[in-house]
Amino acid sequence: MSGRLRDCEVRQLVWLVKFSMALRRYAPEELLARSRILRKGVSTAQFFGSPKHQRMKDMWCAAHFASGYRRTVGGCTVWFDECGTDTDTDFELEVAANRFPFQTTMVKTPGRRIGQEYKLPEAERPQHNDLSVGAELGPTWALDEIRKKVGKMYSEVGRLNLLLYLNFPAWEQDYRKYQAACGAAASQFASVWLLNGNALCVLHANSAIPAFEGWRPIGESLWWDEDGRAAP
Picture 1 (cartoon, helix red, strand yellow):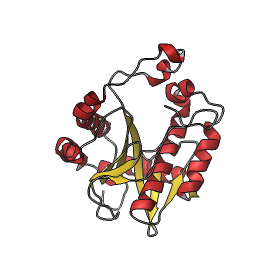
Picture 2 (cartoon, rainbow, N blue to C red):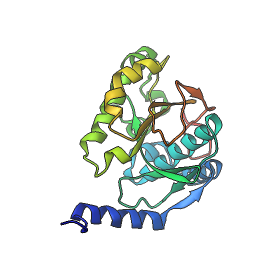
Picture 3 (cartoon, rainbow, N blue to C red):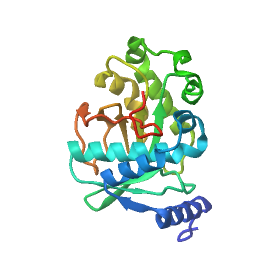
């Protein structure tokens, strides 16, 4: 009936209200500092292996993304909820007084269990030295993650922006190959961005968020271990 909200619209409004009430606004460097504080005392095995640390990983990705965005494009802030209210949004990027909802996800070598690897003594951990596999198959792995997100049937997938963190070894990550492999699937989101160890790019741009072409260096964006050291 005209003038009445559907059940799905009511649920979405409830989620948005809860999320907005729990959000806190951070400058990129503030959020990065906060993520490092929370990371202290959490082992690498726990960090990667336990679902309870997912918000910490989301925070890290949001902080490095925003830091890279500010460095390559311009000013921004991040709205983040440490508790992780049950919504489709992991964080919001604020640019020029406009706020954009983002989801984050990690792209890794299929089947790799990073948390389990770090439970082993260092001498017994698998070595990931073949950089050609990630260079060749990385675009396909990224596409698989985008399709998984599409398959979750979010209420407003076209409103969401997606950030993928590429966490696998590769001697190159060819921007053109990622665009060719992921472009069509990425277009279902408002925008899709890639973050790797030291660079940022956008595969599908949101006209409301100023962007750029190709990879842009942002400085090292490394995981930190429980002692505040860069983790391998």
